[in-house]
Length: 253
Ligand code: NI
Image (cartoon, rainbow, N blue to C red; front, top):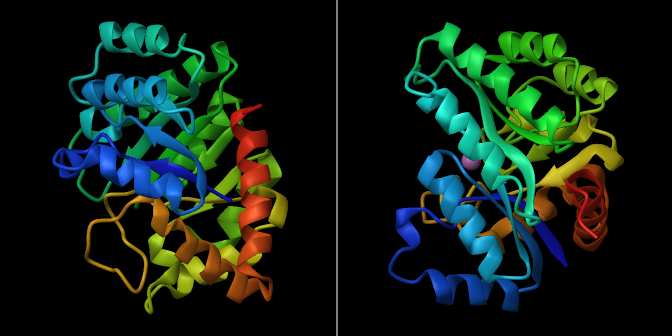
């Protein structure tokens, strides 16, 4: 049984066949999925999907792409959506200096405010960090609230150690399976078992051998397999450990 801790099944790429895809996901041995909101509409749809399916939980939050236009009303709506018992995290939130859709001051401000919202609601949070490692760490430290996960981890082994010492979890996605994913493989090897999570970030980032195709939660097993190979363990062991870790992190049953 596998736990895909980060998927976007609300994405438009599933609009033709969403129900069938979700059925196949559960039929293939995936027991839990956290569907992650990235904008206001995605957050609403995540809650909707979580109410429809037992095995789907939701995270609500605003991605750094949207930080420029984010306002108090959005934060209030996220807080309101989070009252739903199937909302298990605030996310995805963070900093993206690769696309830099919003200026850095705004990104940092709303990242900080949403961490503080998670703290206020006693929920964990999911961090998107693209080319912004140092500033992410700075905002996290400043917040003083460390119940978070670095999703689709792309930083160094050193940073992973630092995050784990704060109390963070580290999540790996398709890139850990890529031939050029040396840095992610090294980081995965360095993360202690009890802090490890796996995810797909579907429909993006399909693992090998499906790289480039539409991703979905059933492919999280290829991420488990890669990490198992790296650590000299079995895929079943990694599946079991990451399921247990995910339940602990998100406070599920
Ligand atoms: Ni995502």
